[in-house]
Image 1: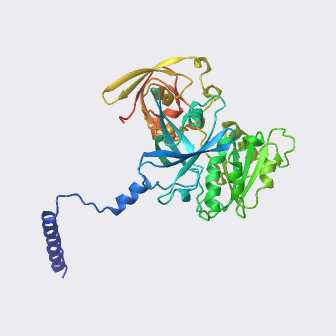
Image 2: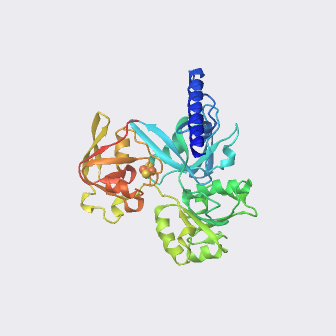
Image 3: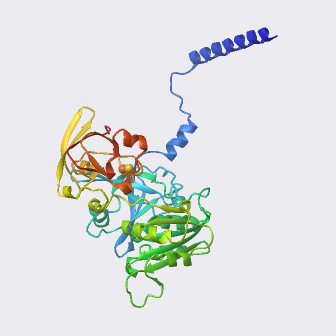
Length: 394
Ligand code: FES
């Protein structure tokens, strides 16, 4: 019996093989156009897109919201409330990318009238791209952008239904996206935003956020400055204040300036909150790398030679010890892919062939194997000698 079954299997297999060969011979030489899986993958991850600015409006006396649509009229890709997009700029000889949290809701991006918005505050003297956006960009301008980056979003399988957002300054933007999505009935969570500002005219998106308040969205503005007549909360986002607005099982999302992170780590530590209930947004490149532990202070005024290999091409450019390799490359007009600029996403992963670098300890998001084999994330690596790196060809 077994022997007969074996012969049947062999006969069946050879018939299938013959049928396949006949089908190949009869097939068209044209590639198959119907590719539903590929279509879905491309819709979700279309890579860099061309966007154009269709609206600019004031978000506070010092910030503006910029609305973008796809320049080719197509649909925008999916993203989660809280994620960021990367916008590319060509300024003079420099090729620069910057991440901006999306302040509009994912549901506002759907359909043929879909859009995405970012809200950008003028810098306080340390961010010429923010000032460029606020001062020079106008309706009709076009950019390339990558939409839907980062891990800072609400995930119902992981996060508690109650969310307390701790925001400072322009760190309100991912929470504006979450609040809009909840108010539109597209996100099932209860959100309380504790928003710290120095003065009432620093509050970004004030009217728009107030308009979203309802049973599931609450905004509490907290002023640290001594403003006469302010009747709301005062002070900082202290443990006492956080406790006052927390109830039961809660996930805490934090987005704001670096200095606020250090303060909040201590305050949250007083509240006995499990680590899995606290989510920090990455905070961008270190403002002052010399302030981080282990940075060789005697090098703070040094400039090194950075040799950049791309395929058979080799360029030598200057690189300051206090500026990341990404900044040195961008200054020289050498394109390197970047996303978060916080050491997290790995877009700027770079092989160090020779020389030494200092890696910002708070932004070292490398895998262990990358550390062992001499890779760095160029947005978080600073030269401490002449360095040779290899980057991918664009
Ligand atoms: S840009 Fe994300 S790790 Fe460098």
